Length: 199
Image (cartoon, rainbow, N blue to C red; front, top):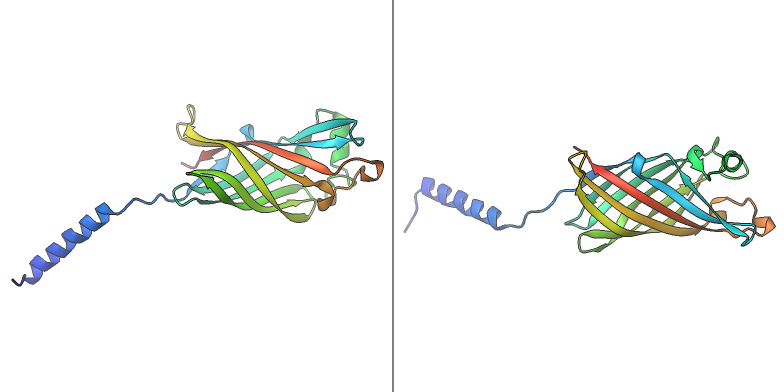
């Protein structure tokens, strides 16, 4: 039986609609802005070759995270204000931004630009990218723990958070202060991060 042209068009449209309805829905990438009031990169470093461990943090950071949890892809772009370093010790804060340590006048920011490289289901577990510190760029891997998304009870939009960590040797970035006095170069970086979905 031959179908007339209008009937064939109508049949084809209906079939196409059924095919689309049966196809799985694909989530689009979602953009999140880092909440600077709930995000603090902190670090631990040796003092005097094992005498004690000094801890500090950076009070100002910003950035954007793009995440597609269905496709298991995404990117991270974070900037840290070096002058916001805080050891809880005024004299150390002043020294830390001086030319022989961070040299904040010449290198005012540190950045990380990377991609998510490992997921557990739809939760990111690892990111790899370029850390730039004191003008030197090196590849680092970030371990992502306790990732969670929920509706922010005040903002009334999605917020995601995690604990992030990595380790590196500071002399790889030209941070050589104290190494000739026996200070150890290893640094542990830990970041508590929260990021709000863009409206």
